[in-house]
Image (cartoon, rainbow over all chains, first blue to last red; front, side, top):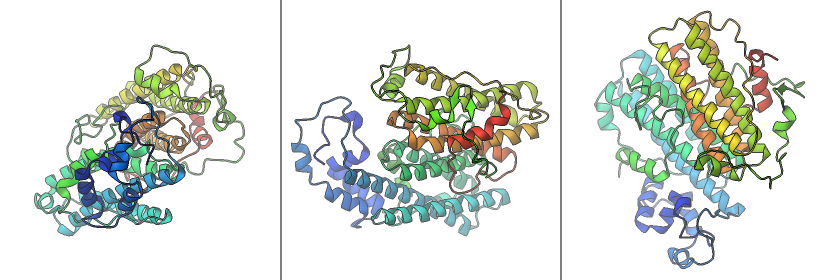
Length: 245
Length: 211
């Protein structure tokens, strides 16, 4: 990763942050693959060389809006890592809806039916993303251990509120990666999932009684006419409460 | 999807207000080194356009055409349809969103030194007869809009324009789900929103454009 310059704050992705920061690297490992898991992401990081090499490389690049030069191999690694990140989020969502259905907490037929259908969509996303990682020659991220017990025990209102939030998060997560994906086929796949997450988000926020223009992660159309993307770090911070450590 | 079989093979020369099918397909029609005019635009847009080529401008104009159609559709609906308490605020909100998309795209295209396409003359037939008929066509527009952006986005060269398209298509997806929800329909046809090629999109909306 010689090309990545340290003086490009506006270009630095969460991944570059993680590469530089040992603490966040460990945290991200834990989020994505479970502690010690040899995820594709781990392999990707290992292939990028050690921190010393990166921090020693300061001289040549122009500052400002320099483009990160990527070779084909590096681009693929970046895409792989993004697909595994998406897979991790989809695992979380699919698991959530499954637990909700199994709990029998949601008695309202309309809402239960919506949860079932959305859960099926999420499972299809999981299956597709897993297959995509394998096609790319990578190792799919492991399914994270989740903790939704409190949310589910809180009953339908709590469940809907969490579902609405998680879907808004999912939509923002895909949007945050769209301009970083190199392979057009992967991009097309991500986009086709992105808008389905957006559909889920709008419907669940509606069902949760959130306002049409409520803000942040609570709103049917939370950001006006233009949706806001979220970085990997922002997203992972929000989902952390639902991950069992 | 209702519109998935609209891509008929004889669509060799669809023309929509001067934009030809070939202009969508011929990427890089403007020289890469073209000098873009510096209009009165926001830094974000100027930056977004700085590296754009003819291909991206064509895609933006394509998107603008769709947004013009949607804007005109909701404008007329809000005026002419007797909307229920539940639907009215949503229709008004969607109109507002589509107008902002129109403004943004016009600005982005002008900022690239190109000419924004003109608003097409529209005819929505009997769509405003009732709330029901309005919502039905609204669903078609929103679903088509989603598929149009999803189909065009991977062809966008400039990453900033791609990012901007993403921020718009997510809203189209949310609109689509809302309209479908109001109609008692499934919020999505499948787990994946099907991308549509530009010519298929233009064919789908052609009945509402007066030539």
